[in-house]
Amino acid sequence: MEIKTRKKVLYLITKSNWGGAQRYVYDLATTLDTEQFEPVVALGGNGTLVTMLDNAGIRTIPLYAMQNSMHPARTLAATKELYRLLKTEKPDIFHVNSSLAGLVGTIAGRLARVPKIIFTAHGWAFNEDRSSAQKYIIKIAHWLTVLLSHRTIAVSNGLLKEMRWPGAWAKMKVINPGRTIGAMYERDEAREKIADFYAFLRPHLSDPWVVCLAELHPIKRHTILFSAFAEVVKTHPTARLICIGDGSLRDKLAAQIEKDNLSEHVFLLGSLTEAARFLKAFDLLTLASKSESYGYVLHEAGLARVPVVATNVGGIPNIVDHKESGLLVPPDDVAALALDIIHLLRHPDEATRYADTLKIKMQYRSVEHMTRTTEYLYVS
View 1 (cartoon, rainbow, N blue to C red):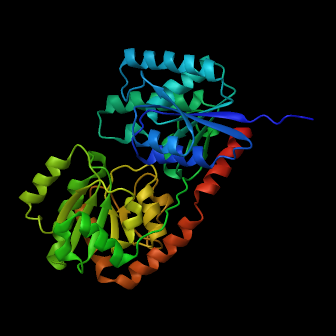
View 2: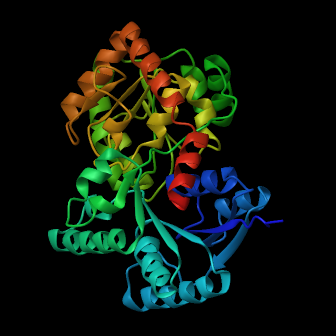
View 3: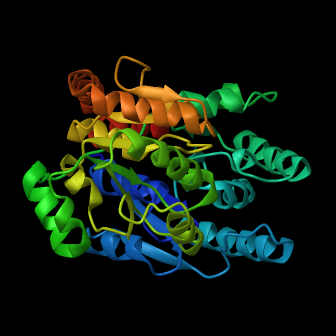
């Protein structure tokens, strides 16, 4: 009788905090067909992802040399650490995620002769605010990562289009991330629960609520959004912008709110556990990002049936079709962003029509579909 052997899939990710790439790894590792595959996750740090994987019964391996840095000494140490790990674990599939992990992982994987190396591009770092020289060097690193992988997954069509260098497209395949949200609170209950956490919102329970769910990072362009919202409140004086997420710009953004007299209109809540479950509290979700590899929050807004206004960058058009399932504006355009937010607040029927269309589209992008498609790539 033939004994069926499972293929070991070793996932690699730089950080163990909870972000889009971490959610992706968690979703894949916890929904793999365990009759065919054995998932293991190697990662840096001891954050939320480690706890969640442990709770799900997924074995994790801590990495000590892996840092979110391109310093040559650290990169060499990380490559050596991964090489030793790969020779010990002997995975059939090595699935690497994030920029630094991608480059170091594909090099180590080739040196260790791993049968199949998969790289998922969650975003290109050359899209961030950097000098032209830095962007060029980083693009070379990304290009080499794609070439060193056996196959590269791009999470959106936008990412595929941005990597046009020789040989890259032949290695790449677009697989949109899946997303499943547990039981969501309905509008009134969600607002009440948010106000229980943040009492300063209680006087505004009946006002129009616009949400931005994003890390407080320069690429998310909160400064542009706040300037646009200053225009919104001129025509909608009861509108409230609620920002969920934390980050390095918190103090700077708080100062802008104070300077522009927006303290009664713009609120920085910080992190909110399982924020997606509260999305029905909001009348509109907006994202002003300069670059966005996919846009999980827009996917979540679709599942929650919340209308969206977002920038026409990266992977966002892979989710939102302009004037069909939401409105798209150019990045860094304060006037356009303000006008479209005002438009949807003034025309709730149109906003609802867009939200209904987006929900239908996003329901097809399930975690189950993403995982089965990825499994096919593992064995093909």
